[in-house]
Length: 451
Ligand code: TRP
Image (cartoon, rainbow, N blue to C red; front, top):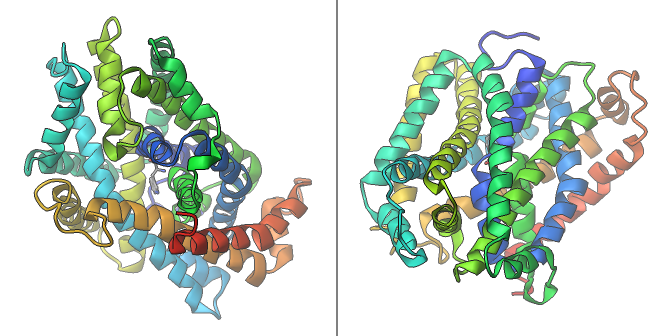
Protein backbone atom coordinates (compact mmCIF):
# COMPACT_ATOMS: atom_id res chain seq x y z
CA UNK A 1 0.00 0.00 0.00
CA UNK A 2 2.80 2.40 0.83
CA UNK A 3 3.87 4.04 -2.34
CA UNK A 4 6.71 6.45 -1.90
CA UNK A 5 5.91 8.46 -4.95
CA UNK A 6 2.72 9.53 -3.33
CA UNK A 7 2.26 12.45 -1.06
CA UNK A 8 0.66 10.92 1.98
CA UNK A 9 1.51 7.60 3.47
CA UNK A 10 0.17 7.58 7.01
CA UNK A 11 -3.43 7.19 7.91
CA UNK A 12 -3.77 10.18 10.21
CA UNK A 13 -1.91 12.11 7.58
CA UNK A 14 -4.53 11.16 5.02
CA UNK A 15 -7.43 12.14 7.25
CA UNK A 16 -5.72 15.36 8.30
CA UNK A 17 -5.07 16.09 4.66
CA UNK A 18 -8.67 15.39 3.70
CA UNK A 19 -9.83 17.73 6.47
CA UNK A 20 -7.22 20.27 5.44
CA UNK A 21 -8.46 20.17 1.88
CA UNK A 22 -12.05 20.55 3.01
CA UNK A 23 -11.47 23.50 5.29
CA UNK A 24 -10.33 26.44 3.25
CA UNK A 25 -11.49 29.44 1.34
CA UNK A 26 -14.66 27.51 0.61
CA UNK A 27 -15.77 27.86 4.22
CA UNK A 28 -14.71 31.38 5.01
CA UNK A 29 -14.84 33.12 1.66
CA UNK A 30 -17.21 31.20 -0.63
CA UNK A 31 -19.83 29.96 1.83
CA UNK A 32 -20.80 33.40 3.20
CA UNK A 33 -21.03 35.08 -0.17
CA UNK A 34 -22.98 32.23 -1.76
CA UNK A 35 -25.36 32.25 1.18
CA UNK A 36 -25.63 36.02 0.91
CA UNK A 37 -26.54 35.83 -2.76
CA UNK A 38 -29.13 33.16 -2.15
CA UNK A 39 -31.32 34.65 0.49
CA UNK A 40 -29.72 33.56 3.78
CA UNK A 41 -31.49 31.20 6.19
CA UNK A 42 -33.27 29.09 3.60
CA UNK A 43 -29.96 28.46 1.89
CA UNK A 44 -28.37 27.45 5.19
CA UNK A 45 -31.11 24.93 5.88
CA UNK A 46 -30.85 23.32 2.46
CA UNK A 47 -27.07 23.38 2.71
CA UNK A 48 -27.06 21.46 5.98
CA UNK A 49 -29.55 18.93 4.63
CA UNK A 50 -27.26 18.37 1.64
CA UNK A 51 -24.19 17.95 3.83
CA UNK A 52 -25.87 15.31 6.01
CA UNK A 53 -27.79 13.32 3.44
CA UNK A 54 -25.54 13.69 0.41
CA UNK A 55 -22.19 15.03 1.60
CA UNK A 56 -21.46 12.31 4.12
CA UNK A 57 -22.56 9.33 1.99
CA UNK A 58 -20.78 10.72 -1.07
CA UNK A 59 -17.61 11.26 0.91
CA UNK A 60 -17.78 7.69 2.24
CA UNK A 61 -18.25 6.46 -1.31
CA UNK A 62 -15.18 8.27 -2.62
CA UNK A 63 -13.13 7.00 0.30
CA UNK A 64 -14.41 3.47 -0.27
CA UNK A 65 -13.59 3.57 -3.99
CA UNK A 66 -10.08 4.76 -3.19
CA UNK A 67 -9.47 2.29 -0.39
CA UNK A 68 -10.82 -0.61 -2.41
CA UNK A 69 -8.77 0.15 -5.51
CA UNK A 70 -5.61 1.47 -3.82
CA UNK A 71 -5.18 3.80 -6.73
CA UNK A 72 -5.35 7.39 -7.93
CA UNK A 73 -8.55 8.82 -9.29
CA UNK A 74 -8.12 7.76 -12.90
CA UNK A 75 -6.56 4.39 -12.05
CA UNK A 76 -9.22 3.59 -9.44
CA UNK A 77 -11.89 2.98 -12.04
CA UNK A 78 -9.51 0.93 -14.16
CA UNK A 79 -8.89 -1.32 -11.16
CA UNK A 80 -12.52 -1.64 -10.07
CA UNK A 81 -13.96 -1.95 -13.55
CA UNK A 82 -11.32 -3.48 -15.81
CA UNK A 83 -13.83 -4.30 -18.54
CA UNK A 84 -15.58 -0.96 -18.81
CA UNK A 85 -12.93 1.67 -19.21
CA UNK A 86 -15.50 4.44 -19.67
CA UNK A 87 -15.72 4.95 -15.90
CA UNK A 88 -12.26 6.44 -16.06
CA UNK A 89 -14.01 9.47 -17.52
CA UNK A 90 -15.02 10.31 -13.95
CA UNK A 91 -11.36 10.67 -13.10
CA UNK A 92 -10.71 12.83 -16.12
CA UNK A 93 -13.61 15.14 -15.29
CA UNK A 94 -12.12 15.35 -11.80
CA UNK A 95 -8.79 16.44 -13.23
CA UNK A 96 -10.41 19.15 -15.34
CA UNK A 97 -12.20 20.33 -12.21
CA UNK A 98 -8.89 20.34 -10.37
CA UNK A 99 -7.25 22.54 -12.99
CA UNK A 100 -10.14 24.99 -13.03
CA UNK A 101 -10.55 25.21 -9.26
CA UNK A 102 -6.84 25.58 -8.60
CA UNK A 103 -6.76 28.42 -11.14
CA UNK A 104 -9.27 30.72 -9.47
CA UNK A 105 -8.55 29.41 -5.99
CA UNK A 106 -4.91 30.45 -6.24
CA UNK A 107 -6.01 33.95 -7.22
CA UNK A 108 -8.10 34.30 -4.06
CA UNK A 109 -5.38 32.63 -2.00
CA UNK A 110 -3.08 35.35 -3.33
CA UNK A 111 -5.50 38.00 -2.12
CA UNK A 112 -5.06 36.71 1.43
CA UNK A 113 -1.33 37.42 1.17
CA UNK A 114 -2.02 40.99 0.16
CA UNK A 115 -4.44 41.32 3.04
CA UNK A 116 -1.79 40.13 5.48
CA UNK A 117 0.48 42.87 4.18
CA UNK A 118 -2.29 45.46 4.25
CA UNK A 119 -3.26 44.68 7.83
CA UNK A 120 0.35 44.63 8.97
CA UNK A 121 0.98 48.08 7.52
CA UNK A 122 -2.19 49.56 8.98
CA UNK A 123 -3.83 49.82 5.57
CA UNK A 124 -7.36 49.69 7.00
CA UNK A 125 -6.84 51.85 10.07
CA UNK A 126 -9.42 54.58 10.53
CA UNK A 127 -11.16 53.82 7.24
CA UNK A 128 -14.93 53.58 7.00
CA UNK A 129 -16.81 50.75 5.31
CA UNK A 130 -16.87 52.44 1.92
CA UNK A 131 -13.14 53.12 1.95
CA UNK A 132 -12.38 49.53 2.96
CA UNK A 133 -14.52 48.40 0.03
CA UNK A 134 -12.60 50.70 -2.28
CA UNK A 135 -9.30 49.06 -1.24
CA UNK A 136 -10.62 45.68 -2.31
CA UNK A 137 -11.93 46.92 -5.63
CA UNK A 138 -8.75 48.75 -6.50
CA UNK A 139 -6.56 45.82 -5.57
CA UNK A 140 -8.47 43.09 -7.37
CA UNK A 141 -9.01 45.22 -10.45
CA UNK A 142 -5.41 46.25 -10.80
CA UNK A 143 -3.56 44.25 -13.40
CA UNK A 144 -0.29 43.17 -11.91
CA UNK A 145 -0.51 43.06 -8.11
CA UNK A 146 -2.98 40.15 -7.86
CA UNK A 147 -0.84 38.27 -10.37
CA UNK A 148 2.21 38.68 -8.17
CA UNK A 149 0.40 37.45 -5.08
CA UNK A 150 -1.06 34.56 -7.06
CA UNK A 151 2.39 33.61 -8.31
CA UNK A 152 3.73 33.79 -4.77
CA UNK A 153 1.06 31.42 -3.58
CA UNK A 154 1.70 29.00 -6.43
CA UNK A 155 5.40 28.96 -5.67
CA UNK A 156 4.76 28.38 -1.97
CA UNK A 157 2.44 25.48 -2.75
CA UNK A 158 4.78 24.06 -5.38
CA UNK A 159 7.77 24.07 -3.04
CA UNK A 160 5.84 22.20 -0.36
CA UNK A 161 4.49 19.64 -2.81
CA UNK A 162 7.96 19.00 -4.23
CA UNK A 163 9.54 18.69 -0.80
CA UNK A 164 6.97 16.12 0.16
CA UNK A 165 3.87 16.86 2.10
CA UNK A 166 3.65 14.02 4.59
CA UNK A 167 4.73 15.68 7.80
CA UNK A 168 3.93 19.24 6.88
CA UNK A 169 0.22 18.96 6.32
CA UNK A 170 -0.39 16.83 9.35
CA UNK A 171 1.40 19.27 11.61
CA UNK A 172 -0.19 22.31 10.04
CA UNK A 173 -3.67 20.94 10.34
CA UNK A 174 -3.29 19.74 13.89
CA UNK A 175 -1.89 22.95 15.32
CA UNK A 176 -3.31 25.68 13.15
CA UNK A 177 -6.87 24.54 12.67
CA UNK A 178 -7.66 24.83 16.40
CA UNK A 179 -6.16 28.33 16.41
CA UNK A 180 -8.26 29.26 13.41
CA UNK A 181 -11.26 27.88 15.22
CA UNK A 182 -10.64 29.95 18.36
CA UNK A 183 -10.06 33.08 16.36
CA UNK A 184 -13.29 32.55 14.46
CA UNK A 185 -15.16 32.31 17.75
CA UNK A 186 -13.61 35.56 18.90
CA UNK A 187 -14.67 37.24 15.66
CA UNK A 188 -18.18 35.87 16.11
CA UNK A 189 -18.38 37.38 19.59
CA UNK A 190 -17.28 40.77 18.27
CA UNK A 191 -19.63 40.64 15.35
CA UNK A 192 -22.78 39.66 17.24
CA UNK A 193 -22.18 42.37 19.85
CA UNK A 194 -22.08 45.17 17.28
CA UNK A 195 -25.07 47.51 17.22
CA UNK A 196 -27.63 46.23 14.75
CA UNK A 197 -26.18 42.74 14.69
CA UNK A 198 -29.51 40.99 15.18
CA UNK A 199 -30.61 41.69 11.61
CA UNK A 200 -27.65 39.67 10.40
CA UNK A 201 -28.42 36.76 12.68
CA UNK A 202 -31.98 36.78 11.44
CA UNK A 203 -30.76 36.79 7.86
CA UNK A 204 -28.51 33.81 8.55
CA UNK A 205 -30.76 31.66 10.69
CA UNK A 206 -34.33 32.52 9.76
CA UNK A 207 -35.30 30.58 6.66
CA UNK A 208 -37.25 32.77 4.30
CA UNK A 209 -38.26 30.78 1.26
CA UNK A 210 -39.78 33.77 -0.48
CA UNK A 211 -36.44 34.81 -1.87
CA UNK A 212 -35.26 31.32 -2.54
CA UNK A 213 -35.11 29.85 -6.05
CA UNK A 214 -34.21 26.60 -7.78
CA UNK A 215 -30.82 28.08 -8.55
CA UNK A 216 -30.43 28.54 -4.80
CA UNK A 217 -30.84 24.79 -4.32
CA UNK A 218 -28.26 24.16 -7.00
CA UNK A 219 -25.88 26.64 -5.39
CA UNK A 220 -26.35 24.99 -1.99
CA UNK A 221 -25.51 21.63 -3.48
CA UNK A 222 -22.52 23.07 -5.32
CA UNK A 223 -21.30 24.75 -2.17
CA UNK A 224 -21.59 21.51 -0.19
CA UNK A 225 -19.60 19.67 -2.87
CA UNK A 226 -17.02 22.41 -3.11
CA UNK A 227 -16.58 22.76 0.61
CA UNK A 228 -16.21 19.05 1.23
CA UNK A 229 -13.98 18.64 -1.86
CA UNK A 230 -16.37 15.98 -3.18
CA UNK A 231 -16.89 14.99 -6.79
CA UNK A 232 -13.44 15.42 -8.25
CA UNK A 233 -11.69 12.31 -7.03
CA UNK A 234 -9.46 13.92 -4.47
CA UNK A 235 -11.07 11.86 -1.74
CA UNK A 236 -10.56 8.73 -3.82
CA UNK A 237 -6.85 9.38 -3.64
CA UNK A 238 -6.94 10.02 0.10
CA UNK A 239 -9.21 7.02 0.58
CA UNK A 240 -6.43 4.87 -0.82
CA UNK A 241 -4.30 5.89 2.15
CA UNK A 242 -6.91 5.23 4.83
CA UNK A 243 -6.25 2.12 6.89
CA UNK A 244 -8.37 -0.94 6.29
CA UNK A 245 -9.62 -0.97 9.88
CA UNK A 246 -10.77 2.65 10.04
CA UNK A 247 -14.48 3.37 10.12
CA UNK A 248 -15.33 5.31 6.97
CA UNK A 249 -18.60 6.62 8.41
CA UNK A 250 -16.93 8.09 11.48
CA UNK A 251 -14.13 9.58 9.44
CA UNK A 252 -16.55 11.23 7.03
CA UNK A 253 -18.86 12.54 9.76
CA UNK A 254 -15.90 14.11 11.57
CA UNK A 255 -14.61 15.84 8.46
CA UNK A 256 -18.03 17.03 7.30
CA UNK A 257 -18.95 18.17 10.83
CA UNK A 258 -15.82 20.24 11.32
CA UNK A 259 -16.11 21.72 7.89
CA UNK A 260 -19.70 22.79 8.45
CA UNK A 261 -18.92 24.19 11.87
CA UNK A 262 -16.22 26.44 10.43
CA UNK A 263 -18.55 27.62 7.67
CA UNK A 264 -21.22 28.41 10.26
CA UNK A 265 -18.77 30.36 12.38
CA UNK A 266 -17.76 32.31 9.29
CA UNK A 267 -21.43 33.13 8.72
CA UNK A 268 -21.88 34.27 12.31
CA UNK A 269 -18.74 36.38 12.11
CA UNK A 270 -19.79 38.01 8.86
CA UNK A 271 -23.53 38.61 8.58
CA UNK A 272 -24.16 40.52 11.80
CA UNK A 273 -21.30 42.80 10.77
CA UNK A 274 -22.61 43.14 7.23
CA UNK A 275 -25.91 44.46 8.54
CA UNK A 276 -24.34 46.52 11.30
CA UNK A 277 -22.17 48.36 8.77
CA UNK A 278 -24.94 48.74 6.22
CA UNK A 279 -23.19 46.59 3.63
CA UNK A 280 -25.01 44.36 1.17
CA UNK A 281 -25.06 40.60 1.82
CA UNK A 282 -25.28 40.07 -1.92
CA UNK A 283 -21.98 41.62 -2.88
CA UNK A 284 -20.39 38.35 -4.01
CA UNK A 285 -16.72 37.38 -3.82
CA UNK A 286 -15.72 40.66 -2.17
CA UNK A 287 -17.97 40.08 0.85
CA UNK A 288 -15.46 38.68 3.34
CA UNK A 289 -12.64 40.90 2.25
CA UNK A 290 -14.68 43.99 2.94
CA UNK A 291 -16.72 42.97 5.97
CA UNK A 292 -14.03 41.50 8.13
CA UNK A 293 -11.54 44.38 7.93
CA UNK A 294 -14.44 46.53 9.16
CA UNK A 295 -14.97 44.20 12.08
CA UNK A 296 -11.28 44.38 12.93
CA UNK A 297 -11.39 48.16 12.76
CA UNK A 298 -14.03 48.03 15.45
CA UNK A 299 -12.29 45.89 18.01
CA UNK A 300 -9.46 46.45 20.44
CA UNK A 301 -6.14 45.17 19.09
CA UNK A 302 -7.90 44.93 15.75
CA UNK A 303 -4.68 45.11 13.80
CA UNK A 304 -3.17 42.15 15.63
CA UNK A 305 -6.28 40.08 15.08
CA UNK A 306 -6.47 41.12 11.45
CA UNK A 307 -2.93 39.93 10.78
CA UNK A 308 -3.57 36.72 12.67
CA UNK A 309 -6.81 36.10 10.82
CA UNK A 310 -5.42 36.60 7.34
CA UNK A 311 -2.37 34.48 8.17
CA UNK A 312 -4.65 31.68 9.28
CA UNK A 313 -6.86 32.13 6.24
CA UNK A 314 -3.79 31.90 4.03
CA UNK A 315 -2.79 28.71 5.80
CA UNK A 316 -6.26 27.21 5.47
CA UNK A 317 -6.05 28.06 1.78
CA UNK A 318 -2.58 26.55 1.60
CA UNK A 319 -3.67 23.16 2.94
CA UNK A 320 -6.28 23.20 0.17
CA UNK A 321 -3.95 24.33 -2.62
CA UNK A 322 -1.47 21.64 -1.61
CA UNK A 323 -4.21 19.04 -2.11
CA UNK A 324 -5.28 20.60 -5.38
CA UNK A 325 -1.76 20.57 -6.76
CA UNK A 326 -1.09 17.15 -5.29
CA UNK A 327 -3.92 15.47 -7.25
CA UNK A 328 -2.72 17.01 -10.49
CA UNK A 329 0.92 16.14 -9.83
CA UNK A 330 0.07 12.61 -8.73
CA UNK A 331 -1.83 12.08 -11.95
CA UNK A 332 1.04 13.42 -14.08
CA UNK A 333 3.55 11.26 -12.19
CA UNK A 334 1.53 8.04 -12.22
CA UNK A 335 -0.25 8.27 -15.55
CA UNK A 336 2.08 10.39 -17.67
CA UNK A 337 5.25 9.07 -16.02
CA UNK A 338 6.59 12.55 -15.42
CA UNK A 339 9.12 13.38 -12.76
CA UNK A 340 7.59 14.92 -9.67
CA UNK A 341 9.48 18.16 -9.97
CA UNK A 342 8.85 18.55 -13.70
CA UNK A 343 5.16 17.90 -13.17
CA UNK A 344 4.95 20.43 -10.35
CA UNK A 345 6.66 23.18 -12.33
CA UNK A 346 4.74 22.53 -15.53
CA UNK A 347 1.35 22.36 -13.85
CA UNK A 348 2.06 25.47 -11.79
CA UNK A 349 2.84 27.40 -14.96
CA UNK A 350 -0.34 26.26 -16.64
CA UNK A 351 -2.32 27.21 -13.53
CA UNK A 352 -0.63 30.60 -13.42
CA UNK A 353 -1.64 31.29 -17.01
CA UNK A 354 -5.26 30.23 -16.53
CA UNK A 355 -5.41 31.90 -13.11
CA UNK A 356 -4.12 35.14 -14.59
CA UNK A 357 -7.04 35.15 -17.00
CA UNK A 358 -9.41 34.61 -14.04
CA UNK A 359 -7.77 37.44 -12.16
CA UNK A 360 -7.79 39.87 -15.07
CA UNK A 361 -11.41 39.01 -15.80
CA UNK A 362 -12.31 40.85 -12.59
CA UNK A 363 -10.62 44.01 -13.77
CA UNK A 364 -9.38 45.10 -17.15
CA UNK A 365 -10.88 42.14 -19.02
CA UNK A 366 -14.26 42.24 -17.34
CA UNK A 367 -16.03 43.11 -20.57
CA UNK A 368 -15.44 39.62 -21.83
CA UNK A 369 -18.26 37.44 -20.50
CA UNK A 370 -19.76 34.06 -21.27
CA UNK A 371 -23.42 33.65 -20.35
CA UNK A 372 -23.18 36.92 -18.43
CA UNK A 373 -20.35 35.68 -16.23
CA UNK A 374 -16.72 36.79 -16.29
CA UNK A 375 -14.14 34.01 -16.56
CA UNK A 376 -13.54 33.97 -12.81
CA UNK A 377 -17.23 33.53 -11.96
CA UNK A 378 -17.66 31.11 -14.83
CA UNK A 379 -14.94 28.78 -13.51
CA UNK A 380 -16.30 29.07 -10.00
CA UNK A 381 -19.83 28.24 -11.08
CA UNK A 382 -19.04 25.61 -13.70
CA UNK A 383 -16.95 23.52 -11.34
CA UNK A 384 -18.94 23.72 -8.12
CA UNK A 385 -22.40 23.83 -9.58
CA UNK A 386 -22.05 21.48 -12.53
CA UNK A 387 -18.86 19.44 -12.79
CA UNK A 388 -18.64 18.30 -9.19
CA UNK A 389 -22.30 17.21 -8.98
CA UNK A 390 -21.95 15.48 -12.37
CA UNK A 391 -18.83 13.69 -11.12
CA UNK A 392 -20.70 12.67 -7.98
CA UNK A 393 -23.66 11.47 -10.02
CA UNK A 394 -21.37 9.29 -12.10
CA UNK A 395 -19.63 7.65 -9.17
CA UNK A 396 -22.85 6.99 -7.26
CA UNK A 397 -24.20 5.20 -10.32
CA UNK A 398 -20.97 3.29 -10.55
CA UNK A 399 -20.89 2.28 -6.88
CA UNK A 400 -24.62 1.82 -6.42
CA UNK A 401 -25.51 0.06 -9.66
CA UNK A 402 -22.44 -1.38 -11.36
CA UNK A 403 -20.22 -2.41 -8.51
CA UNK A 404 -21.25 -5.55 -6.66
CA UNK A 405 -23.24 -4.97 -3.48
CA UNK A 406 -21.25 -7.55 -1.49
CA UNK A 407 -18.06 -5.72 -2.34
CA UNK A 408 -19.53 -2.42 -1.26
CA UNK A 409 -20.65 -3.96 2.01
CA UNK A 410 -17.26 -5.55 2.43
CA UNK A 411 -15.44 -2.26 2.04
CA UNK A 412 -17.69 -0.26 4.36
CA UNK A 413 -17.82 -2.89 7.07
CA UNK A 414 -14.06 -3.39 6.87
CA UNK A 415 -14.45 -6.98 5.74
CA UNK A 416 -17.32 -7.65 8.13
CA UNK A 417 -15.51 -6.52 11.29
CA UNK A 418 -17.77 -3.50 11.74
CA UNK A 419 -21.50 -3.93 12.23
CA UNK A 420 -22.18 -1.01 9.91
CA UNK A 421 -25.88 -1.00 10.83
CA UNK A 422 -26.33 2.06 8.70
CA UNK A 423 -25.50 0.09 5.57
CA UNK A 424 -29.06 -0.26 4.34
CA UNK A 425 -29.67 3.45 4.57
CA UNK A 426 -26.33 4.22 2.99
CA UNK A 427 -26.94 1.88 0.11
CA UNK A 428 -30.42 3.23 -0.45
CA UNK A 429 -29.06 6.78 -0.58
CA UNK A 430 -26.25 5.88 -2.94
CA UNK A 431 -28.49 3.83 -5.20
CA UNK A 432 -31.64 5.94 -5.35
CA UNK A 433 -31.71 9.16 -3.37
CA UNK A 434 -28.35 10.61 -4.35
CA UNK A 435 -28.56 10.00 -8.10
CA UNK A 436 -32.14 11.21 -8.20
CA UNK A 437 -31.46 14.29 -6.13
CA UNK A 438 -28.39 15.10 -8.20
CA UNK A 439 -30.28 14.70 -11.46
CA UNK A 440 -33.23 16.79 -10.31
CA UNK A 441 -31.06 19.54 -8.93
CA UNK A 442 -28.88 19.62 -12.03
CA UNK A 443 -31.81 19.76 -14.42
CA UNK A 444 -33.90 22.32 -12.58
CA UNK A 445 -30.85 24.44 -11.90
CA UNK A 446 -29.69 24.31 -15.49
CA UNK A 447 -33.13 25.30 -16.75
CA UNK A 448 -33.26 28.06 -14.21
CA UNK A 449 -36.73 27.01 -13.10
CA UNK A 450 -38.05 29.16 -10.32
CA UNK A 451 -36.03 32.18 -11.27
N1 TRP B 1 -12.87 22.29 -0.12
C1 TRP B 1 -12.02 23.38 -0.47
C2 TRP B 1 -12.44 24.60 0.33
O1 TRP B 1 -13.48 24.60 0.91
C3 TRP B 1 -12.04 23.67 -1.94
C4 TRP B 1 -11.80 22.48 -2.78
C5 TRP B 1 -12.64 21.92 -3.66
C6 TRP B 1 -10.64 21.69 -2.81
N2 TRP B 1 -12.08 20.83 -4.23
C7 TRP B 1 -10.86 20.67 -3.73
C8 TRP B 1 -9.44 21.77 -2.13
C9 TRP B 1 -9.91 19.71 -3.95
C10 TRP B 1 -8.51 20.81 -2.37
C11 TRP B 1 -8.72 19.79 -3.28
O2 TRP B 1 -11.74 25.56 0.36
